[in-house]
Structure formats: structure tokens, C-alpha cells
Amino acid sequence: IQIRGVTGGGRDKPGQRCQAKLDRLITEIERKTAGIAWRSCTGIAVLEQPPSRENISYNPQDKDIAEILLSLARTVFSDKRADIGSTTVTGDPPDMALAYQQAMFALRAGQAIHKGKGGTVYHWQDLGMLKLMSAYYDSDQSRAFVQAELGALLEHDKIRASSLVDTLEAVLTADSAAAVARQLHVHEKTVLFRKRKIERILGTTIDNHDKQLNLLMAIKLLRLMQFGDRN
Image 1 (cartoon, rainbow, N blue to C red):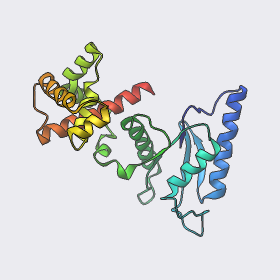
Image 2: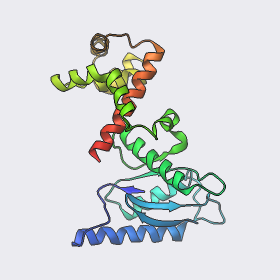
Image 3: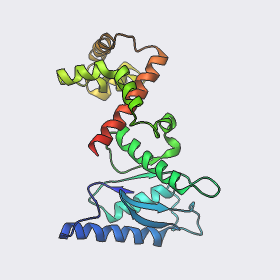
């Protein structure tokens, strides 16, 4: 569990209040669920059993235990935004280190790809192809791949102070030019003009499925790298 703007440190009064709230959240988690919670370097780590009516203050409207934890975090930190990364512990014996890494990457990937929108649960199991990036997204090979696929467009955006990479991402993920136009708050003809401009800068069509996959993977890697640099 990561609370935006809360580090858990500091000896001044705001810092002490944050620490007291973190302690309260840990107490609430252990009181209202079957889990154990402790402070980690990035927030609060929680090890939970699957919810049941016998071992948890059960609310049938909650999707799963992560949603319950998010609700508790929102209650304690009503003035902050909370994000949660979650996974299922596997292995015999259970591989706790791997589970922690997966949950942390789910949190990082969710915050990076969804551009910092707070108050969300990000599940490792829902990451899809992003799972393949968890071990090497910040490697030299990944940076070389991003440069090969997006380098010309990134350079153009830097020089012109434009955002064609964002336009490209919208084009690759939306269902139609009309949907892209609504997302970017521009006219549909503007979307088509920008698409042709992107293809001219990249020197290739972006209608090819293999090229679309490469570009989308490169954009996701770029978001992960940029988020890591900022944090």
C-alpha cells in the first residue's frame, strides 16, 4: 500500500501525524482482516489470507481483499490518495520475495502506465504482457529498443515541445480515430493529420500489426522508465 505524499519519516508535527496514521492503518488492517501488516521502504506491506465470511469483516460489495485494504487506507488517509499493488503468493514453500517483487512491479506499472491516477488497485495477474517487462524494463537492451522504435519521435517532441508520442499511444490503444479525437479533445481530422505526421517521422506505416505491437511495447517501457526517473 502506497500513500501519496507520505514517507513515514520526519520528527516535525506533520511527520509525527503521518507516522501515527500509518500505525493506525496497520492496526486497522490487522483488526479487520486476517492479515499481518508492517511498514516497508515504500509504504505498508500486507500478507493476507483470502477473504471469507469467517475470518474477515466481510462486505459483499468488495471485489477482493485488495479493495478492502484500499477502503481502509482511504478511511485513515482521507486527504491522501492510496494505490495498492497485489499478487498471489505461489510456490512450495511460498516464495515471499517473488511475491513482494510482483506486487511492487504491479504498483509501479499501474502508476506509470495510467499516468499517476490515484486510488487504484493494480493486480500482477492483470498486467498481461507487462509481466514480461518486469525483469528488464530498465536495462540497456530495453533503452535501445525504445530508442530504435521511438527515438525519432521523441527527438521531434523534444525539439518542437509537442506530444506526438501521446498521440501515437492513443492511436494504438483506441478503437477509432473518433475515439482518439474525444480522448485528446481535438477534431478527428487533426488525429488523421497527426497520424500521417507520425508515420513520416518514423519512416514507416503504423497500420501493420507487428509494428503496432512493437510501438506499444516501446511506449509502455518508456512510461516505466520515465516513472522510475521521476521517483
